[in-house]
Length: 330
Image (cartoon, rainbow, N blue to C red; front, side):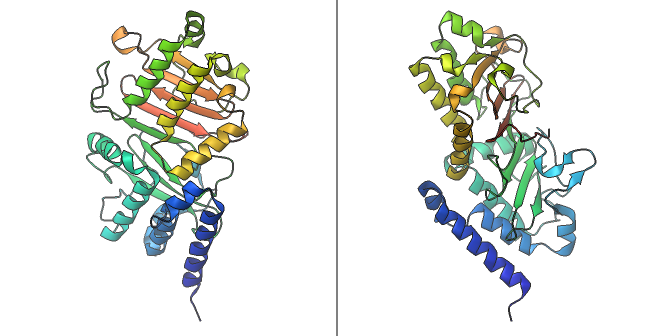
């Protein structure tokens, strides 16, 4: 007779395979390249001792006294659990699994840039970083959350309803704390360069509409719903070439992540009306160098927020869902 543990493992692998077959062809290709991040989360979970599980594993709806629903919390610099990945709390094989999960979430062509960010901000992968697992892999809803300085990433196997990326995420980089206006060596600054090219494409009236005097609180990425709650220039008022460039900016923003997460984000955006339901804002109050190259900017829709803060260094907050009813915890 097989053990419960073996049955759970088999059920997890079977359910993952079924999910892959049901997904789009890019996701199928992604899944056939090797173990998925989701199957690796299952491997990590099964490798944990009872003591380890007690420290990093939680019920799906676990409430933290300070952070509320812990699974959905996001911040720019935090540890979701006490044990750092590179501490002796984990075995070498467990650390290797966590690293593979990370590499599975991030698109291969972005690995080097992310590792550079981690080297600059934390001294390398696993330092000042921690993970938590919510739910039980192979038994319904589950999610692994990876946190640290300038990072919140999630791996949920699409088991979290209505949201992309498993919930709100964060990325950032500080080669130096107070960056120069060119953001030298910042691996994410190219995104802002492309957004500013769009600003140069706007006519005077559009520029005026897109400019907002004060940057909102960067953590404020809750959904406002209708256009009435959005500042800036409505995308619906852009010309076709301007919309095309904004679409390329959006592609640059999402290309960092695996194909299945990109697809899910685009599906959420489409359900709420696409880019035409969004607005674009450039913030005037924190312009490094006073050069009119806007360091802070934001794309916002009914349930879509990509908030880019480039001063004094890059912080980016992302919250994407297919419904305005999803609550943000930051």
